[in-house]
Length: 110
Image (cartoon, rainbow, N blue to C red; front, side, top):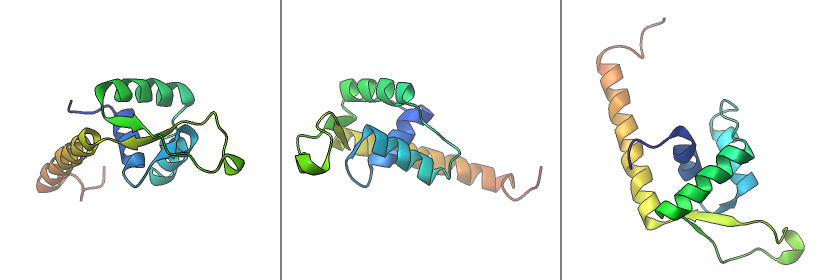
């Protein structure tokens, strides 16, 4: 499954600290990328559909109080496979950063 597409990696990362609905995922991605990544609904829901099929995420059966939430929202969470794949991708990326540092690429100004 590796390497992951940026959209899939961002979605998995957004779900790493708990389940979220689609709009919550988009907000989380924008927040942790400091606005550099703005995921639109087409990218999000197309990726979510593929990730559900691949078993990387699951739709949550738990729902907030209906008075506090829109019943049309779907909540998603990482599956155990999704968590393992996210960990493997994060390690792969970390190894690349280590290689770039060893070549003094991150310490130099372009």
